[in-house]
Image 1 (cartoon, rainbow, N blue to C red):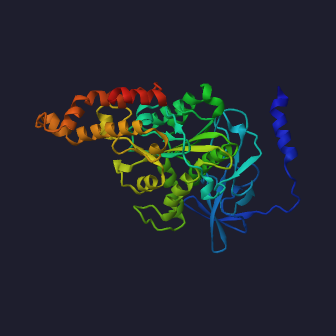
Image 2: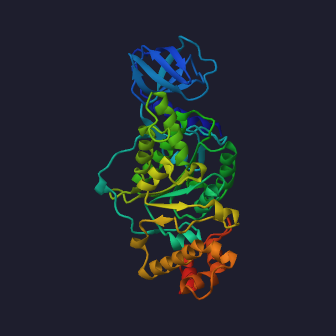
Image 3: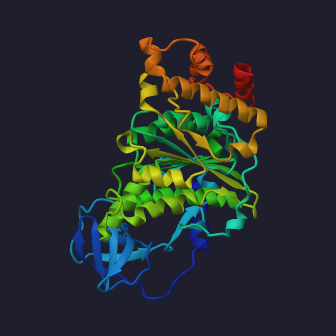
Length: 440
C-alpha cells in the first residue's frame, strides 16, 4: 500500500531537472496593504515566490515593477512577514498545472487539493493566459446543448461551444440554476470554478456533486471570498486552463464560472493597487478587459474538434442591469439569461425573465417551427406582463386585444411551463415537445 503513495513522488523527483546554478533571492523592502516591494530579485510578472526559509506558508505573486523594485501581491495574510525577509522564486512563471490527475478532485487557486485527498501529481502545465489561436480556428456553433432545464431548452436554446451569462441580483437563484445545469448537462468533462463565493457554498457544492456518477469527470476549483484578490483571479485562470487542456484533447467541456463579477472585483483590487484610475464606477480599464480575455478563451476548436461551453454567472449589484460588469459581459457573451427578483418573490423558480433573456445562436440550431413557437411564447408573456396591473385592477375590458385575451387565458399554463423543481431534469426533445403541445 505504501508504494502507491511513494511511487508518484519518486517519479516526480526522477523527472525533475537538477539546476546547479546559484539560487538567487531578494529582500522584502516594503509592505503596503498586501503589496510588497522586493529588492535584488529580477523575475517576470506572474512568477510565484516564497517568503522566508524552508517551507514557509507565505507566498506572493509578481504583479509589476517600479523604481528598480519588484512589486508582489501576497497570496495570503501578511502575518509573520518582517522587513528584510528573503524571497525565493519557485515554479515556472505563467504556467498552471492541468491534467487528468485533477478529475474527481477539488483544488484551490494554486492547484493544491482541498478535499482531504492525496497530493495531485501532474507534470502537465498550461499557460495561464491561454494559447491564442486565429479567429478562424473557432468553428461555429452547430449543435444543441442540453441543460436539463425546460425553459432554457425550449425558449433560449443553447449550443455546444456557446458562452452564456446568468445575470441576476443576489439571492435570486443563480446558484440553484447552475446546480440544475451541472446535473443535467451532457459533457465529457465538467470544470466548475467557484470564485469569490461563500465557503459554505463551496462545501455544499462539493458534497452534492462529488459523490454522484459525474465525479470522475468533474474538477472543482474553489477560491472563497476571504482569499487574496490575485488568488481569486488565479483560480479563474486555472479553471479556464483546465478547460482549454481538455478541449485540446478533443473533449466536450462544460466550464461553469461562479461568478464573473467576483473575478472583476479581484482584477479591480489589483488595478487600483497598481495606481490605475477607476474609470467606470470604480472599475479600472484592466478589470473590464480581464472579463473579455477570460470569456474569449471558451468556444469550439476547429483544430482539435473539442469545445468549451462556458456558463458564467454575473452578479448585478443592486439588480442594476446597466452595471459596468453586466454591460461588458452582455456585449461579449453569446447569450444571457436574466433572473428577476419580482418573479422570484411571486414564487416562480427558476425566476427566468424570458423577455430579457436571449440566445444569439438559437436561430442557427433549431428548426423554424420551434423558433415560431418560442417567439409566440415570448409575445404572450410580454403582453401579459405589460398589462398586468390593468388586468389585476379589473380595468382591462375583455375583447379589446385578442392577443392579450389569449395571454390572460393561458397565463397559468405559461407560468407552469417556466417553473421546474430543482431535482427535475427535462431533455431537449421533451422540452420542444411540451412547447409544441402547449402552443401548437
